[in-house]
Length: 455
Image 1 (cartoon, rainbow, N blue to C red):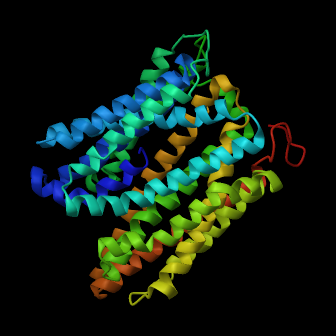
Image 2 (spheres, rainbow, N blue to C red; image 1 turned 120 degrees about the vertical axis):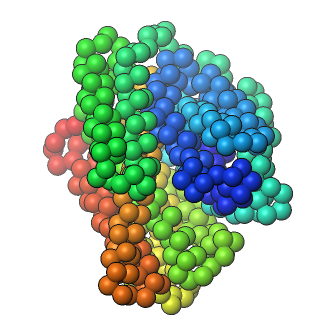
Image 3 (cartoon, rainbow, N blue to C red; image 1 turned 90 degrees about the horizontal axis):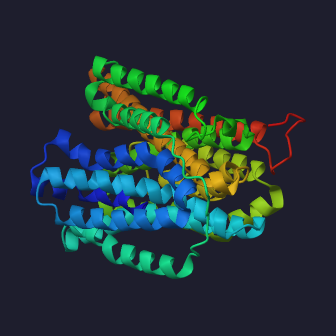
């Protein structure tokens, strides 16, 4: 439900714009309001789960998300929809941060945990692909309101099943001390950073507005780090960064998300604007990649981790994704699906299916159960920030390259395609860097070091 809501809205944006009279600029806030609070509250949501119980925060998050979805579905003006989307993002941050922690709480055996992470990866992949298809179907057959109202029965069912199946004794801790100063500084810092990133294209990356926001965000982040060295119970104990796998997983997560978010967005534009596909055809084109991702996530990825450890499958998966991006970087103006789209899709689906599980395990395996929510919040934040920054940067790069060719007199379609090609190429560089870091720096198991260097 959470992943679904990051993709389902995109298809319905034209209908929302017409119905609620959004301008092109204000329409972006239907997406940005969700991203802003989602990215801003992931760390705090994870820590609250550690302090007050993963089960309790999960139920609260799902409850608020369901109510916010109802408010989105009933929205009759711009302000109501944007505020409801912001509340959705806040609740989604809490749920996303503690969902992984619940898996760590429930499955203590490595084999069971790897399988459970695989199912989680399958649901994430399935939610993303289902969103594009379901958004089109609901918007065209009913109305855009139903892309939000569809969450109501799911939310009610999840709450009912959680009350029955999740033990009340999960993740019980005596400490309830919350680092308020740290929580405020890091949350505002992340929200300002996301705001600056998602508006970078519109305001200009070198504009005073964008630069000042990013500087304030960095300043607050430095203040947060200073606070964490001095308080008794820090929101984010800095010693966690001495855990090599957690630190490397976050860096790899930023690089991979930067490549994957941009690929998903720009490849859809390439298929629609260059090849002339309909939105429905674009959704179907992504199906092979998502099916492969799902198959690997549901079992094969877990077996690879149990057989080869974390490092090799993660590096291999990212290497395959890199090859897929390189193929997209060669896609021509008169491209054919079987020849120019499907091979790259298959490699990216295969790479993501193999890599997602070991990346999550790398981030979560070395931390104590009392800090698993925080570790989950960290890796989710890395994905969110990397994805937002990567998408904004590579979309800007594609637009700048296209503009340069148009000025030089290159035909519009060729100029557009050239812009996408250079963005895919830079995305491949990000993915390759992630693969290299995973291969060289990651440890396979807790307590083992690579090349004799301890974490």
